[in-house]
Image (cartoon, rainbow, N blue to C red; front, side, top):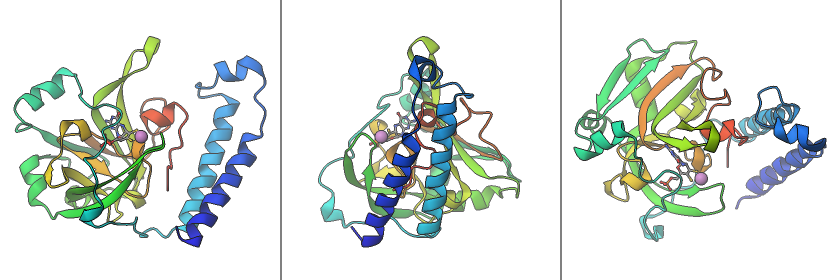
Length: 263
Ligand SMILES: Nc1nc2c(c(=O)[nH]1)N[C@H]1C(S)=C(S)[C@@H](COP(=O)(O)O)O[C@H]1N2
Ligand SMILES: [Mo]
């Protein structure tokens, strides 16, 4: 680890400790934890803003995540989260090995469009051997092949008012009594245009397996695993994240995880 990385981690840890010393007053605060008005949420949100700004200052926009050699791949990519979606729309596509799949791209773009897998494979490709870090405490090195998201964004021509890229997924997550909600994620346009941000259709020189997000998943190599949406159904360019889920920018973010999960 470089000294910069250690300093950055220490700084972020200290920032986190400062934010977490705000006391939770009894059960009311915890019960209201997930509501948008909760004061706990505001503290989390401001700590998140600090993390985002600290990362953006300390890491340049184009700094690359470390890449590894193929000999450092020890196993298949360990599947996590949804690994076998059961939604009928997904099963119908999977039945035909995704021949009818189309990635739709809309929202704040000049040319809303949809791409088949063959079209995506014919675009400029990038392969990278990178380490996936899951917030649950495991890492895995794998080779990912796909089309840079920036190339896809150039095709659709992003409107100037767009600020975020939202990934809509096929799989739904069970939230108990609240029912099932679709997995979704979002990133800003800096990460979207980062050279290692790719829409991956290949993993370890094979077609992307269902367990890892077939037919298409995003790799955002400077962020934690949960940001890397699998089973992508559509991409939307937006100016605000408020309309989606509980408005925090992703399935896990709506449950309290940081939106900017930089590593
Ligand atoms: N659609 C979708 N994307 C997802 C998830 C999920 O459950 N559904 N899990 C996330 C988490 S927490 C991780 S660690 C990675 C796991 O990717 P893998 O199965 O290829 O290891 O996918 C992320 N993207
Ligand atoms: Mo994860």
